[in-house]
Length: 177
Image (cartoon, rainbow, N blue to C red):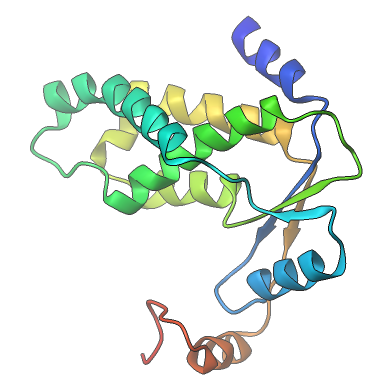
């Protein structure tokens, strides 16, 4: 408990952190881009160097690898996308802790920590049922709920969501279906 409390206190004086959540086509990225163009104090996401990403990848992989090898070696490991998600979850917190107090500055996260934690919990590999992973997940969940100031849920009727996804220039998993 003291570890979690120390991390919560360390994040108290950060820029305002907002996560945009909602289904594909709801307008999360459009809203983020519009707000970013309108106000220079709005930052889309948190920049991470490749070195930072690699350090967090090593930490989490080495932490979970013994559990995987002992109990889950015949099931799948994390996909590349899931590993990237895990890296961002930890590295973004690390970067937030380093930022100077600035409540005029807003960080907007599209596909942010709550979305990513939910995705891992629901669709991750078998190892996500282990006590080691659940402790990792729970710690990050508590740290992120303390770090986030606002969660904005965007949504639209399914017909509009599908129409927006099909009209995009970029690829999406359900485009064309």
